[in-house]
Image (cartoon, rainbow, N blue to C red; front, side, top):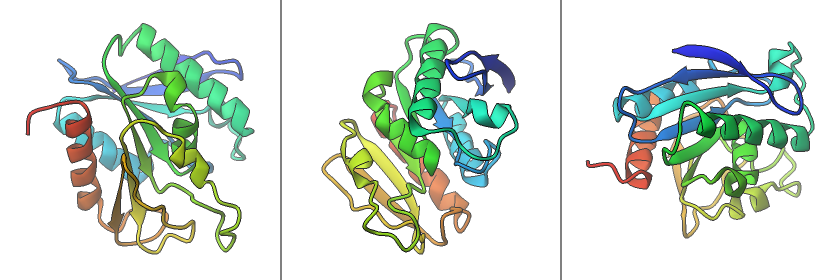
Length: 203
């Protein structure tokens, strides 16, 4: 694993790269609003990708690199994310087919920018459908706007809501809440199967 700074319009981001020797594709993941790239569900997804030869880039947003816990506005998060993915495409990940995603707020960023980053699939870990207790404040349009195959792994009792499945969207429910730590093995299995299918890898 290597870590390096990547310039963005809103300050340096940090990329933690787990490179496969002969990568079958790339997975770029972002963290949640108040957490980092060491979240257990992100680690589990990384392990699942590595097991099938997919290179993984875990992206720390500039506000985290600068030591702030409160996230930047959505437009800044999106711009920084796009800049990082573009630089990864120009360097480490080259012309690999890319799946983008993240945990919670990071999943929202990946959904909003999926078309701009040229993703072939989107992986959402604990997508926050709405703030707890505020179902009228839905963020479902961000998920519905994604035009490529999408996997959502959601805790069965997540206070941020449960998204519905859709024509290109699979929803896998695991025990637990928004942390997704109730069954990490089920998460790994779902992620590995999804990546293999989207990237056209043999079973």
